[in-house]
Length: 184
Ligand SMILES: [Fe+2]
Ligand SMILES: [Fe+2]
Image 1: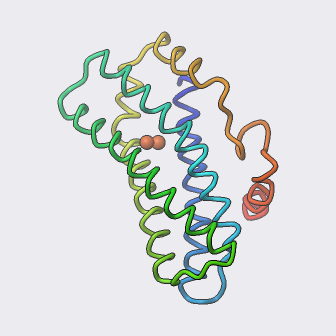
Image 2: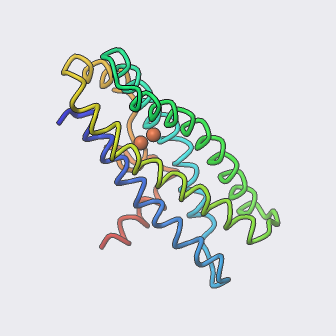
């Protein structure tokens, strides 16, 4: 499998892990037993940084290469849908992230509003990644050749994951330690 495709799969795995963490915190907020707002904020800062600025654009480039190779109408329809979802995910993610930044800074936001926005985001991103796994990822492997994968790889070479990549960015240190400790 190409490095690009294994990285995209790994991104999905990491995203699912973070969405699991997020959902657990949302459950705690929902039943008023707690909820770590700083952790949720860090998750959303990451989501709006790495997936929105590297993972999804990398997929967008992969979709463009697939189109150049020639795709069936149903694949074209799926790609159009996924491209729209990338835009919608970024918008929803920004709104939810800003909500959490506000809460950490002391803003008062209704618990139900925050939980609803969080669950909506987690469900949407979870469904989106699953759809890709089951459709375009499978087709991309069949359709693209080494030259396509190299173009995609080179375009994103400089962008590494700030949590799961080789260097953990300082601002994500606490979240990284949380992930590491909850995996043990
Ligand atoms: Fe995507
Ligand atoms: Fe994806």
